[in-house]
Length: 267
Image (cartoon, rainbow, N blue to C red):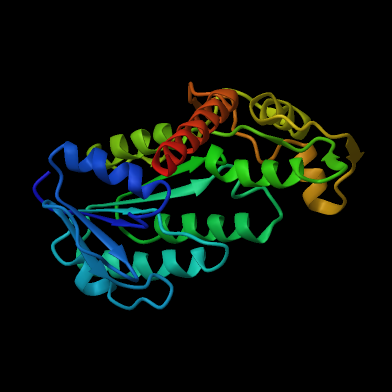
């Protein structure tokens, strides 16, 4: 790949895993961030803001492929529209977006913004690829950890997740960057579909401190959508291999190693 690849969100949870893969593959990577910092050879950092559009034109200059990973609680649709407009005028050859499974089905603002971002990319007039991913293990963990600390744990019936390991998502994105535009590709999700009690049971197996659960029912349209599994990947999805329990074991082992290192340092 002769031209640089621009990665938005290149220092985030997924981006920090994708960038080294691309770099190791011989790709010149340019990272767009609001607060750039010095990088190793072959990786360039440029300043820009996806939501305001500041810095996008110079960031895309000379770029052949854009991997759009930057996202947040709000503004994903605005950021994608800004990127799509500049990508067209810059002559970008491949525009890749990571989205979320169920983007067009879940009646929740975050999902709706992701669906709008998908439409912006598809309508940009630039060859494109969209990958929908299930929730990362890293993002499910704080939710489960917060629940596990409650004296009595609310357990919404029908609320299920299929968490996927960040390294498997990063590897798939690297494949897409190095490949040809493919439109909407198969979703990527974890190997299991797990309820809240099942997520908690695995967490307790690794970290202990079991507490009683209180079954509840999620109200409204969002509750109906979750019970219908609208947030779950379809039968054609690509499934990761690393399970929730394996991820928790990694976290637990890391904590033990960190504690041991701290103890040795104090000694």
